Amino acid sequence: MMDASTREAAHRAASDAELIAWVDEQDNLLGSLVRSDLRQRGLIGRCTFIFLFNSAGELCVHRRTLSKAMYPGFWDTAAGGMVAAHESYAESAARELEEELGVSGVELTAHDHFYFEDGDSRLWCTSFSAVWDGPLRIQPEEVMEARFLPLATVLEEAEQKPYCPDAQEGLRRYLALRR
Image (cartoon, rainbow, N blue to C red):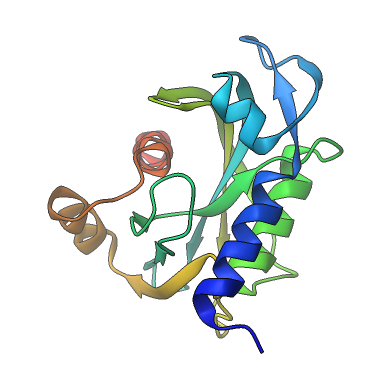
């Protein structure tokens, strides 16, 4: 049986080899590329963010594993990830939510579509939200821990702890749209 670090490394290798939607500056699909090639060449991919709330209005935050290529060990305000070559944004969001947090069968509400760039990351992003009061089943290769927190606590923590900047931008935009 594989230990946790071996499982994480195998998962990372498989993740780096996934075919990801490759797009231009206007989010027109150009084709697909292996995730690691897309990142190394500084090309643009598609990404989803799913802000998962409980019925009390608390936001699910989770800590990324140390084996992640981008933002290892950072806290994240959204489930989500890269859109596979054959997927729509909505299909990717549903898949990622189920993979990372074990949540399926919930209504996903689309909110925003925007471009994000930071260092090695160039992304067209679509954000979604969902409400879930059931248990979380985290994917141990990608998520170390997850919990629901009041939004004010999340925003305070993000000032002191490393939070993923791409999801933080998505959250900032989501909150601005709700005003």
